[in-house]
Length: 634
Image (spheres, rainbow, N blue to C red):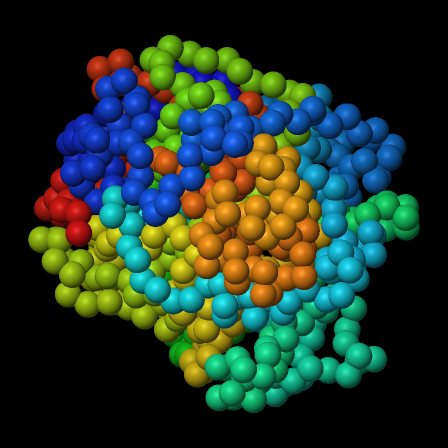
């Protein structure tokens, strides 16, 4: 990452600080008093409270923050070889523009198609398909793996243990980051899919009638949903691959395609192509299009609301944004609104100072600053919570410096790792809270919203004072602990749309692992420096005996354990929110990211590296009057 000090960022900080004030010990990711303890002057790492902590002494993480293995950069694909392009379309030419493209093309001038939509996910290890080519993973014996729903019911119960340090905003900004990085091609859980893999009554179809690309989730007879509704099948459509688009030879293993660009560029706000970006702009004053209701600005409404949202009234809001998942849950939508409002706030501020700038210049400069703030928040505010501050420093993902750092490397492929997007990053679904706190200006919680009542129904954030009250809730309510326990709001009631039950996100995670043919947990843990397990008991170096016993009952062999499952059961590396295998994957992914592009992050010497921008633009983009900067942790 090339770190550049730009006047626009300094201007932004001055504008924001003058309006809100600066508090060097506060971040909205922390509940309050823990901030100074975590970020010590010498950048020492505080050990997070964990049970039966694994110290990683047998792995590459000797002190919990070691370096993961490095991978060689992929060979530059030939422009004449479609298989090497992963179905991505290279641009005809890279223009000499000051501003980044919307689809990520030409971010790397030597390899202009890298990181663009419709290109392959990367991999750390070769795929593990049932037939070696494309069929979902099976056990080494050739038998089926345990039902993903059975795995979910046994391994991921609803036990509410809250994080003692971090607020729900740490979880929620993680969803902003993951949506900015990746979305699988051809399928989404949030909206009904045109391909139906189950009958209308939730029954399994006859084999001859199952559409192509179906991989339905089967509910066991003992399933509480099956027992109460007689449902035995949940829809699951496989991700589109390069084989589906005839980009590779028929004897080559399938690789999944991404629908969005791979860069941290706020494509969730601006879109992944020129057409989407233009549809979201006012083309006046550099502003994004907004609707004004009750004195506040909101994203424009989607005219296809019935096909996108689970609205119960035609007057309910259903938003348009750069990403189709904008309406998925209230707090995701809230942060997307904040980012949209921040763009327009920046454009207006720049217009006051640079009255000679035209619409395009104002738009692009505001976009540039907005992206820079997002990248700073991601790397210096959010990521150290997940992978550890010391780990981030040691692996040169962030720097303890007030100077400029030029470590841009155009040989690093920005492709999102399949192991990261499909397994390691999805582990943090455990951080989700099933009930969202509504909090007054005095930081008193006066009510909650049940999460499953408002999936794909963003209207709730416009009602009463909910936007501000949910904002305060994000910044005060603890996230759930990073563990194997998941709220039933996402394992029993996901996207239920007014029905008694919904889908199971954790079963989807396991099913997607097999759909993508990820290497087994045993393979990946060995890749990351842990000893290969020859028996289930060999997992005891990082797992509890109870979890090992349950795995032995579910799987035939330690070689069969899904990466999504095994990685989620590891005890946390101190100072992080992940076990050693997932930490290895996450570190590798963000290590690669840190070398990918020219970023516009600046360090002001008077306040060192702690410009907690997210606090500032969250306050400016809502109506949080009399905000308590130092919140009380629960």
